[in-house]
Image 1: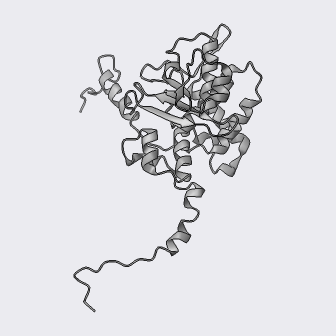
Image 2: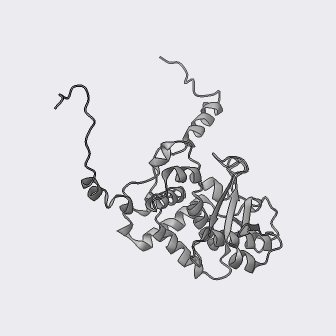
Length: 280
C-alpha cells in the first residue's frame, strides 16, 4: 500500500532489535538443520596426521587436540575454538583439572611427564558456557589410546600454554608460535575435518561438505549412543535440556540399527482386552 517497511530504520537497514532477535533464534539448540556426525574413524585420521607433524607445527597440533577434546566432551564450537565473537565462552586454562586418581595436579608446577604419563583423568569446569550449571564439573578418564584421548589432548594444550607463560584466562584453543599469536577457529576445524573425510572416501556415507565444526558434538553423542550409553546420560553430558537431543543422534548409524529387525521378531506380545472384546 506504499507504507514503509516497519522492519527498517531511518538508514533503511533492519532495526538492530530485530537483527538481535533473529540472531538469537538462529542460536537456539539444536540448529534447524542437522549436521552429519563425525565417526571415530575421522578423528583417528586427524590424530594420526597430528602425530606425524613436525614439532613446530603448533597450530595444526592444537587443531587436532581441540577436535579430540570437542568429540569426547560433546562441545559446541564456541566452547572449543578461539574467535573474536564476544558472546562465545571457550574453555580456558583455569577451567581445567588434571588428576591422578582423586589427587589434583598443580598445573603450574607439575612436570610435563606428570601431565602426560601420570594423570588419569581430566575435568572441565563450566562457568558461563551455554546450558551449563555454574561450577559444574564434567570428568573423563583415559581411553588407553596413546594419542586419541581427552586427557592427553588437554594435557598437551596445558603444556603449550604454560610454556608461553599464558595467563589463566587464556582459551585452550589459543596458540603461541614464537612472537605470533594464532587461533583455532571454527573454519579451521571444519577444513581439517573435511580433509580427513576426503582422504577416507565415500565409505563414511556422506560428503565432506556435509560436516562442519558442529559435527563433533553430534559425533560424540552418536558414538555414545552406539556404545549403548543411556540417552539420559548423553543428554546430561551434552547439556541438552530437552529431548531435542535426539535430533542430533542419527539412527542410521549402523551399530544402532543393524539388529533391530531381528529383535522385532522376538517381540511378540498381547494387548490387554478392552470392554469391546467379548468374553470367552
